[in-house]
Length: 236
Image (cartoon, rainbow, N blue to C red; front, side, top):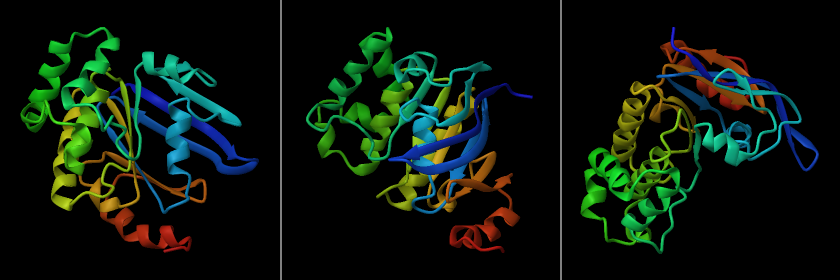
């Protein structure tokens, strides 16, 4: 069995005094992709932010690599190997591709080392190295965001709506890269509203509805047939 790298145990969280997560349990193993699915407003992004230390848990525990890190500073979690790539890609649009990658040398790797890994995984970025990130296509910006995240050598990779605004063919290519990243031993938790985008590469899936995990298991045909009813909040 692969090692459990990320666990949320009975996590509750609130926004402005309103509870949005009601005892969420999630677990992600090394080398596996877990898909967190659900409709808008279900609490998926809040779950990722709790996992990255960016939003406090009102109760429950956050465990990374077997250590209870509940309440830890997000910088400490990042140094422990937790990397969040937020919705909207998070690249610096007025900087070039190379300058975006250069900023990741704070991790202790040299520019040459970071570029070698980034350009080997995403050759198009090598061809766009001098181009401003804001002028890249949406898919290329997402590649750059992934490349920046991988420069931290993460043990846990948190992805929020990787498919947003992208053509299905581009999304498919990106998720192939995500599957390859997981095969290298990274625990990947992917938030997606559009289940079809991620289920083909996921090892496990959980469906979050109104802040509660209503269904979990393997991404099999039974789960796929239940998704529309779960999204609508009714029994299948």
